[in-house]
Image (cartoon, rainbow, N blue to C red; front, side):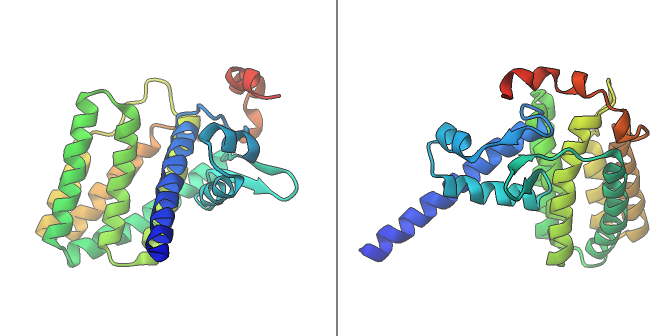
Length: 239
């Protein structure tokens, strides 16, 4: 009985971790928590009604995903990727994801492709409902699921991190009036993978990533950002 109760407590704790991670992740990506905003453990623990230990674990996970920066003796704050980092992230995605689609096309798995089709179906629903948050999440899920199909856990881990960082980069540097990627681009990639066409799969993924990159302006240097304007909406929350 004691073992069962302990296991149930562990499962509840894991669900709590996931719930808090998802909430903070979404707040960062949607700029409700702006770049450089301090993330005090006590305040977060009080907001979620949990211990500082759980909050610390979530913040460490977000730091691993490069969405949070933890500095010894200073605590955690929301990351603020520079434009140089943004360019490097996209360069890395081009290199890694081109190889991943080649591997998936060469060793395609119907069950895996059906999983990708299911994500695209949900993307279409989110697009119809004009649910940007859900659509961004599902777009990231598509790329992470595709990476998993390639069968290389190390590369899949890299893609998960890069997808998270891309979401923050887009939120921070998105061009006004940018047109989001259509679900059709993901569908076209799936169709090419289903036929085993490596060249077409790579080209479609390259074009898709270029479309994502076109949504942001990484031409300016980070030093040229108007910080007063950038943080004006969050000034009332910081003290």
